[in-house]
Amino acid sequence: MADINCTELAPAAPQSEVAAVADAAPTPRWDIIELLFFAYRDFVGDADHVLETFGFGRAHHRVVHFVSRYPGLKVADLLDVLRITKQSLGRVLKQLLDEGYIVQKAGDTDRRQRLLFATAKGEALVTELARLQTGRINHALAGLGTGDAATVLTFLRGMIDQDDPDKVLQSILAGAPPSGGPQSKDGR
Amino acid sequence: MADINCTELAPAAPQSEVAAVADAAPTPRWDIIELLFFAYRDFVGDADHVLETFGFGRAHHRVVHFVSRYPGLKVADLLDVLRITKQSLGRVLKQLLDEGYIVQKAGDTDRRQRLLFATAKGEALVTELARLQTGRINHALAGLGTGDAATVLTFLRGMIDQDDPDKVLQSILAGAPPSGGPQSKDGR
DNA sequence: CAATTTATGTCAGCCATATTGACATATCTG
DNA sequence: CAGATATGTCAATATGGCTGACATAAATTG
Image 1 (spheres, helix red, strand yellow):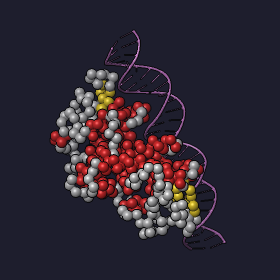
Image 2 (cartoon, helix red, strand yellow):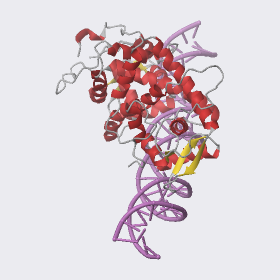
Image 3 (tube, helix red, strand yellow):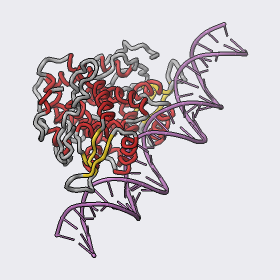
Image 4 (cartoon, chains in turn purple, green, brown, orange):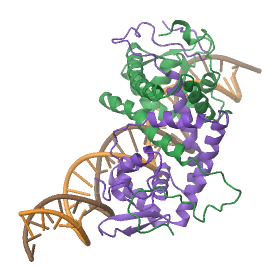
């Protein structure tokens, strides 16, 4: 049994006999599982700190980020990307609208749609947060060879569900953003 | 102002004139910023789905995971790793104790300490969740060359604050876990 | 045109998880 | 013994998810 006297930290393989699991499970990638946890924690921590001074949370960041990056995003698109309900989005979005980080515009062809755009204020916030996070990313990439950034991108893409119907995600996975618009005009 | 007529999805660089920011900010790594968001979302989504059937949430997973991986972890250590308050931890930990996923044992030298250990039940849960996540990781790594896993590890380590006082994190960043020898001892 | 569907907004309430502050208990240390 | 430490717990609060129900406007369809 696990060394009960051990007060020190030592990742002891927990799989004593339990590991004789059914169908030859591959060795768990404990390293990547845990590094992802810490990396993401610190990554979003950069933004969290700044957002606090604005009275915003992560939810606000996600919304204004994607609106800024994909101008004209519809509310429905945003719901797909963030995978939250419109009620949850509504609260956050209303704040961002009220405080002038985002504006709405009725769609041309379908005037029920509210197309979302970041204001200069919104862009500034997104840019500042991206600057922080980019600093961390560049620091991490600095320890790698020239071609290795591509490896990281490939890995991250491989971590994402490929069968996701989300328009924004598809556009990202496609690699080169399709600015002319191969995307169908009306998602869904 | 951003192209108001654009109904299409096209990540349009938001830095039109705003980009003339203060001190020559490096080009934001929008690609990695967004891929990290989606990758982590899907990564934790694997576990979330299973946890739901147990009536647990992400918080429970984090606790039982680190307890399982680092047997004998103290409550204070766990607070450092998870960066939450003991009140938040208390609620989740109590559930895991009550339902037999974790047991406590008083420290030998300091009997105030409650050293935490995962039970077989707890190990089984952690193993199952790690199995899912490892599947996703291996799928992502499968698209890479042989040496590229090391690149990913280096990148992820570079994303983490190095000055963190947390014992568990230091042990992870150190690469080879101390005491008991390298975990590769028996594989499995 | 009328009926229906769609896109969005909103109200009311619930739940999970985080927070702070205060306080209790047991135990170690000087 | 006096204090510091490790933990547990109570009470109140905030954030950000959720569901269900309902309202409005506009598009679509019969």
